[in-house]
Length: 213
Image (cartoon, rainbow, N blue to C red; front, side, top):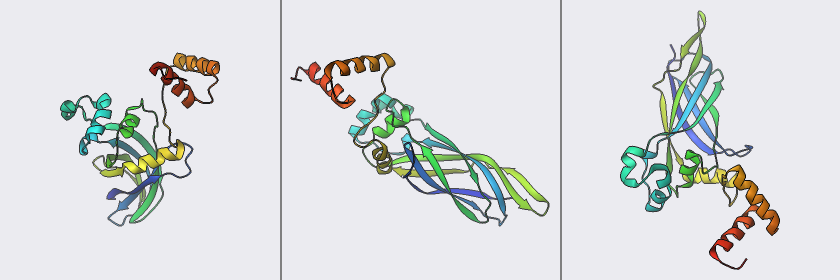
């Protein structure tokens, strides 16, 4: 029987993705010398927010997500980031597999809100694996399930996440509003003749603050 192992060796901004994506390199190993035919692999990625420290500014921004810091012993629970399926081609000993992980820029999504709330440091990730492994024997191709206990921890630098967002939304971010709010903003923009949404919101803020528009 094969003895599989996993490790995440790198994680960078995926340069040519159509939407914000993290490109991780997953190293798959087999330690007994068995020739692997293929592995139908599923990788579940979770954020483990309890495994890092937070500055006062970060804690303030994350209070909407986790509540007051005094409650964080109860509220800092793992968050689901993504579940990725990948076919690992045949190999002996080891193989490096690219893993494309989509990321949300929406600050109303819990993971997006968490990422936006961080200044620096690392994001603790946990990779959980499942799937089916096919391997060669003298009797032909045999099948084994990928063991559930195989897990990999990886600390993703916040700078990598920021680089990903800057590639797709330089100096900007997403703001999610209700459809009727968007319709009202469109009407206001047309009436005021503002050039873009940024100028529209800035004009509204000036009016609220009483500053001359």
